[in-house]
Image (cartoon, rainbow, N blue to C red; front, side, top):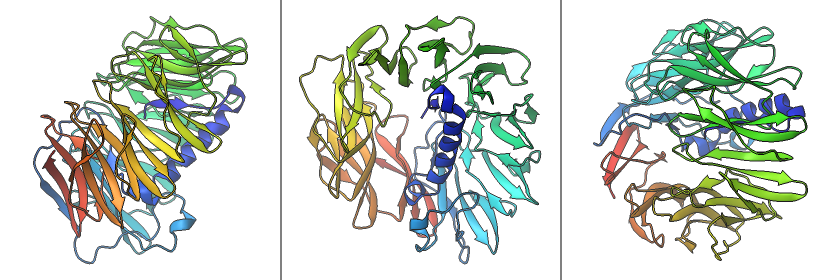
Length: 469
């Protein structure tokens, strides 16, 4: 997800802390364990099945996931390895325990033992690795086995798109810093949002949240924190970027109103300003950054906005960001009302009304406008493709359309078996149920688009699987 968001201005810092906490705890849940793909764009996906590592006999997973809070619901479950694959399929890492210490194994290389370790992140090509580690009461960022400067706290790192730089937030005493490689900025007594690199890896963007809650600043800086462009008084939604990190959009406070601003990251002084509203939320950009959508309130009227078009928005809370169709002609948004949820199609003049479900998530579109999402009624989960429900499973997650739009691929679980499913992209009918494994991680498509790659744990083997559609 590319959005850096907070609640209303008066609650911004508190909500940021909550978001950071929840993101950390979420990484420790059983479901996250099965979704451990380190997502960094730009790497070419490996096109052949490869055993990346073998867990040696006698190596034990940690009894408590290091660096994070424990989910009470999972305390009675047997420990399992937290496995993370790079999205390129060229790297895998896991955390192992040894007594009261923990260490990371990257491919077949074992790292140093620490009191605790944090989230593991790969570079886009899967060759490099970074994570926070605790030793002697101090946290350091460990990049390719080399430790950085000591801090009281370090948060999850990110690699630049070219894989050459690492950025993260760190706290020492009363001050928070953004650190790029070995250089830290001047710091603030409040905090920052997670930074984002530009597409060419030469700039970094982040929001400085002032302690007064009234002077938050969106900053675009060079990597040495020398030359900076500053946008003041950023409000409800801090900022969002497109998939390729070429554009930024943010919500800015103007007196007691809100407006959007957007600009090219490489040209941060050429800013486009949107109209004023009483409330703006759920701001998102299209994948290519050329279109923007958000929810707004004008007086008592709820609206959804797509570029220069505005439509009334039905009642309901949006648990996920709107999704802009690839043709920019419409927006899909999941709306929850009275503990039920349905899909609303905006700007399409469609008379289709989405069915109402107990739960729904992961809306996505193909290039030709087909759509899919995961939904649940009762205990049954299934993929909904163009309004048609696929077969029921115990759980399904994150459908993806193939590049040619012919297939939709998703992960599923049935009777404790985990596997990938390939379905047709018109009605969601199963074409192939791939083999089941102990752990199955999020699939991606190879360069040709004719195969799907994903990481699996198969006994002691950690394998990048590549299978035809």
